[in-house]
Image (cartoon, rainbow, N blue to C red; front, side):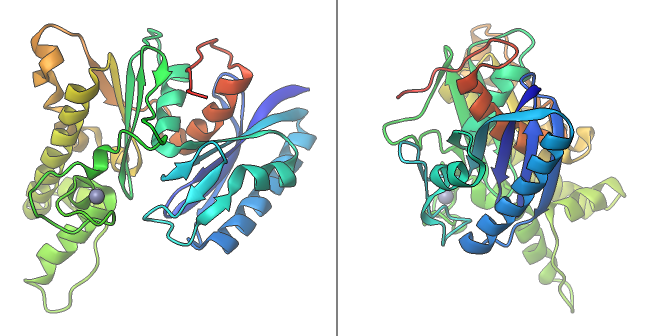
Length: 321
Ligand SMILES: [Zn+2]
């Protein structure tokens, strides 16, 4: 029997469940649109999890643990989801207990961006560096930080909320209640929303655009879309540079839906890190997209469990008890 972990990635729009080997290779994965509300979402996780169990049984795989990645805030000690802005009725949902009851194996919960940092450190880190920052840009902007091999959590486990650092004083309203956050401008959702608003003022029948629509139009030669995209990437570049200045990583990796944009379109998001304070004193910082591509959610969730059990690379991120 080959050991795998059950990986559960809970996003604002999609839920993915998979089986992942100790070296980060994905053995099985299924992904569906999230019903958003807690109860049907938990039923969906149960159904996808059962399908994964069947796949494991048929293929000689044994489930050693369950890793869960979910947007914060979370109570990591008790394994609870605490009404994240994008999942408002997930109020004190005891996720780890529920997963352990449903699937037997011990379950581990982590903030999705922290999980991204753990997966990067374990499996997408060829130089085995100990200072890794991971930024996820999708419905929101999340950030996970590993410093000298330790996960940065803050006092409550909800630290490094890069997306809620204000970019613009008294700017656009953000889901967190503040105004002007990076997330309100440069997340995938925000890019689509702002473009929709910009176009609505000059169109008789306004349509709704996603970040992907903007990227596609930019690629197809629409100059207005290209300029809008570039200014959005310029905002994102300031968030990336802020992370480089705050955390001084050796490896800075960016994942999430927005990174699926064409390489040339995405490059401006990484343009400012070369001018960070650390870079100015000669620190060699590698900054790139995640090596997991579209699998980053499931790989991230899995790494939370493999980091506890012991992954194939032997790298272990220390997490405060
Ligand atoms: Zn905010």
